[in-house]
Length: 130
Image (tube, rainbow, N blue to C red; front, side, top):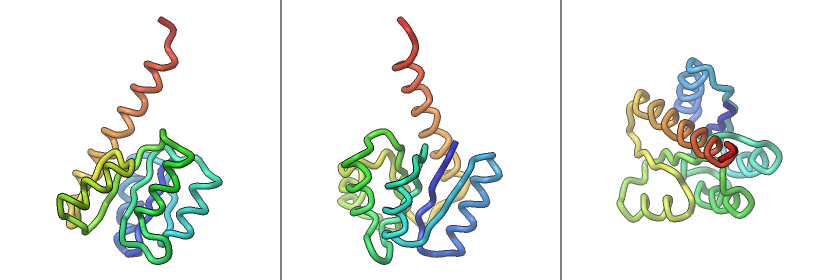
């Protein structure tokens, strides 16, 4: 599974990347919205962990741009924006899950596993002969 972590706090980003790599995922990362948009335009990822407060393009813009061309890639928003309106906006814009900061890394890893399981189950259902 190929994952992308988009987080402008470098130390936090590296912690997340290391934790996900320990689960045997292939993980790339970037630290701003413009780089994220460029990576998403040329590479396919199974799951994106997306911060909303990014320099350059904000995370909501990155998400909307991704959803214009790709409805399948799973997106987990990881943000300090914790109001219900922020969560609803993110989910309505196309995120599959939303986790607020501060967070526990064990919960993040569990949510990543759950999203990837759902994606695999959906693929299997669509591609298995009846």
